[in-house]
Image (cartoon, rainbow, N blue to C red):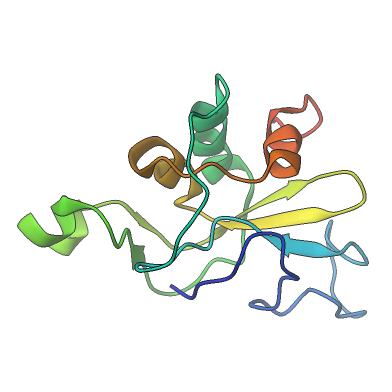
Amino acid sequence: MTYYADLTPYAYGRDNGDLGASGLWRGVPVLNVGWLGRGRRYSQGAPPPSLTETLQRMARTHRAQQTRGFHFCPWCASRLLRRRSDGPRGSAEVRVMGSGVAYAAPELVGHYVEAHGYLPPSDFVDAVLSSDAVV
């Protein structure tokens, strides 16, 4: 998976800034969150109550930009000790609407919070936990 610093402009997929794009994200700036990389520092801390659970639910309900292959968690021991197919993996993004902005995170963002202590930016957390974002 490619590393992107939190809250930088999204540039991975084909719909950010594309006037011909359709769907909810059209014309709304999209920012990166949770595109972590092995060997890169990231914000850590205790997550607010229900953040992990909500992100894991959103990995099923807020999916976007499905890819053809899988990304495996680069930190999990399961990746080294068992077959790769047994470890946490993702193949899409989670999209969340914020206030005048959308956030794009890898599908494994909930796993990163739960298993690796990742603490996403507060604006993203607020958007995830808002009643409007939860399906």
